Image (tube, rainbow over the protein chains, first blue to last red):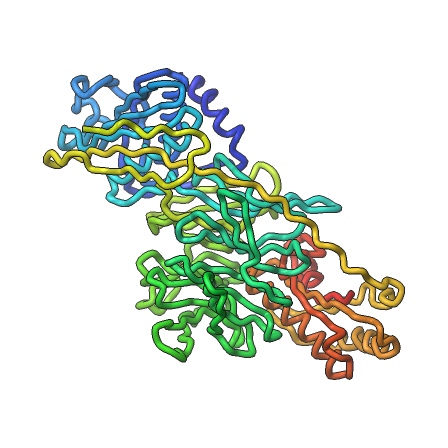
Length: 424
Length: 167
């Protein structure tokens, strides 16, 4: 049985460029029994294996499948709660597939609370047969939501850059994939570097920096049509795009003053507002969740440190946020705006760190040599970042509950991750 | 109770969020939703046209590279020696126009390194300006850490990558 399951898992990874690997889970996970869904075995097994992998990746769940149970119920009447209590299982998921026609595949599933001995949720997802992964992610998010009370991110997407290094010409690709690294779709292929990709708040567009014209320029690309434009025409280089939460503005780093300065671009009328004015480097701007503040990296103190500008007050002076160590850069606000994650140098290592604004210290979240580009999941629960292992770039994730996972590329390097908003 | 499910075809596009609480019988949640699918287009970046360069007059500058310390854009005395020769050549031949590209090593963030590379290139441009070379003959850009010369993770490799190249 186990052997069979393993064989069935392989096809999922053949199409996945990134390979998921869970390195550490939380201390007090929920125990969840996922019973093989009723319906055509081939599809049902695939759905179940994706759900299991989604739930495990959160770090908050231990999964028991049918082979690990005392009794395997086929429906609500057959559930012997005692058998599940004995195994320390908290919740049971039962489901069935309905294929109404060649174009319709829907899944209904129920969640049972073992302690309360009752059904706590009954749900149905309507999908199509060739989108089984997506359908499974929807179910995972439904389960996650019901049990944790937080919106799930299995159905969200990641945006990142890959590089295949060749002696003559390197190949850079801007890619989107499911949150588990599967289902890669290429947005841009180029022989010149691509950096700093980021999603528009509605997740329909992306902005990024491409060197294809011979110097750094910011592009905005529509995902559905592939239509793209240079965000701002300018003779000097432009970089570091960041969308305002309402999607109407893009903060950018312009170099027209002979130095990196942050400007805000009104995407509708293309008006520019200068935000910083200092002879040292100012870049890596990022908007607070309510759009009232912008954090950025500045070299004005002699080393890169984080500063914040209040947009509601005119001529607001940048307020220094970090004082710990001599390198704090590329910040993003936490979902509730009460802290930020960023790159922090400690003991000559570049780590992902977290600082709450009411605390005067930094919490390191990672510990390898060169971690960068942290991006927070839309539910605020997971941070994905770029790291290196054996001199190769890969993506890694850490949840606020302490679980860790890795997404290495099968070929070449992967870096600059950016997490989409909710898509469900 | 429930509506007929939305028919989905593979070219369906648009947001259909269909999560609704159909009944609120005591504490049980009942939901229905329809998969939201979207298409994605792949774009091929066209390679930039190489600016026509006068290679004969530029030959003097090939391999003119100056190096920098970590997180620094100050010119060292060794760099100034290298640049002196370039200034002389620029003055001797007024037709020469140059591009200075700044680079950084892999440590630190990519955008900060892009800005740092720019500052390195600007430092070289400033040196030319101080020595009477018109700014209009010098353009600057940065590749940050994106175009390393050495791929190692040791200081030897890092030192080679913290550079400004004059072409």
